[in-house]
Image 1 (spheres, helix red, strand yellow):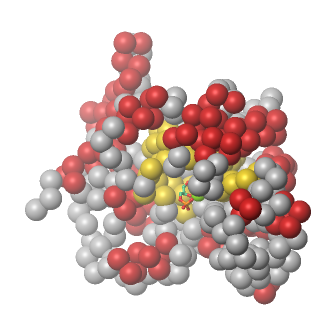
Image 2: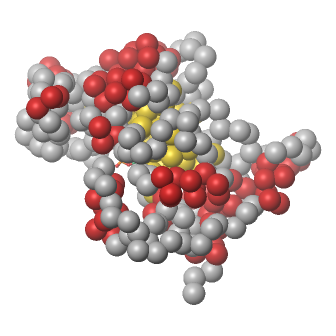
Length: 306
Ligand code: G3P
Ligand code: MG
């Protein structure tokens, strides 16, 4: 039997194919078994919640100040990903935080898109990094999702940031560079984020799977918070996150173990998990001390879930 440290917090017991369906926003079948309730972390919570000794700073865990349910790629599974319509949908449903992905066009305009190619989420073809923004902005980014969203565009980061401010939404801006543009994308996104949110009472959190992007973002806008984003927490994550001056760690809930939760929180980072599409898993993660989740299922996991 697996030790409690190896207990996977984000797995429902569904066969992998069903988890994949849930990730895409499709309902999954009921799990065929339920995992045991997670252990309590009373000892660590006591440390997080109040010991004032500054010598214990590594073990002090500030309360996560941002929304705990974050809409993945704008509007999750209810709208085309990384669009203004998705961001509006999230706000209309009462959510207070969104995550979206930002890449550079050929002429270095930061814009919202997940893939390096246009094929899956627009009516265009080919590489995002090789296409000028004017062309990208003329594409349809909604019809692939449903006819209702025909005419939806690939938004610029500037448009998305301004919309978030207007709607009072907090943003996790994921720097998603096309290969070879890691540093350039980090600098461009950080500079524009600073311009868009400079002086605002609530700041965005920049994250990236690419350490070079975070390093570049840090140099360009050291005052903006950064999140260390990784699919699985491998050995050395702490050194890497510390070297990049990150305040949070973001990882795939499917590989997260109880032991890692203690490690991350014990080291003083906020811990965020993606992509959590089943309420039972969201409940388990929150009860275990995760600070925030990214979800596609805005219909199943409401803004006030945690
Ligand atoms: O930032 C969390 C999550 O969005 C990372 O995965 O591939 O959906 O950008 P992805
Ligand atoms: Mg993302």
